[in-house]
Structures are given as structure tokens and as C-alpha cells.
Length: 132
Image (cartoon, rainbow, N blue to C red; front, side):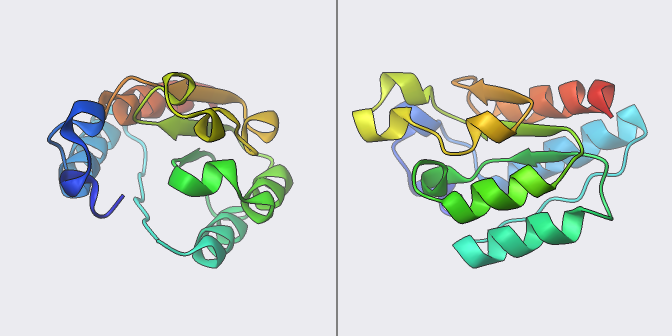
């Protein structure tokens, strides 16, 4: 996701991760909730972020990107986290290649947002603010 601005514009639009983060931080201020934005390209790093969130955060919004379709480790970390969890995809994974249509994460999260573009992040933030 750190190279979002370099991906297929028809699928991912023109946004970049910095703009998404700025929009989420602004909305968090408006909702009076603390938002911390994390990004890693490492599966192990993502597992560690989830594990550290267990006693620190009231909810998780996760875009696991390609790891959505491959990572049992991220799924298991999310299963241990008992706060509200939202799985997020910028594209509609169900309109994409067959291998992208399966998520290891969906069975252990409370909600899935898919196909709303980068607006999905602020929509997820609105939703999780009501869930916590």
C-alpha cells in the first residue's frame, strides 16, 4: 500500500497512502477518537502490530492487501484480538481474479468493506467509532 499511487489507476484511483492517512486523522479528530495509522510490507510486521494492539487499541481496521488471500498467521493474530475488527479492501475483491476472492481474514472480523475505493477508509472509521 505504500506504493498505492503507482498501482493500476482503474482499480485504485489516484490516491496515495499519505492522503488516506491525513483524511483518517482529520476524521478521527472530528469524531474525538485517537487514530494511529500503521503500514508494513512484512507479514510478520503485520502480525506484531495486531498483537501489540491487543492491550492498546479499542478497534482495528486492517487492509492486509495480498496477505488477505494467503496469511493464516495474520488471521490467527486477528482471532486473538477481541475488539471490533474491520477488514478493508479498496477494490471489490469479488470482481477480481479468482485467487483474490478468498479471504483468510473474513471469518474472524466483524465486518468487511470492499470496493468503495479509498473512501472505504473513512467509512470504516465511521463504522468502527460506533462499534467501540
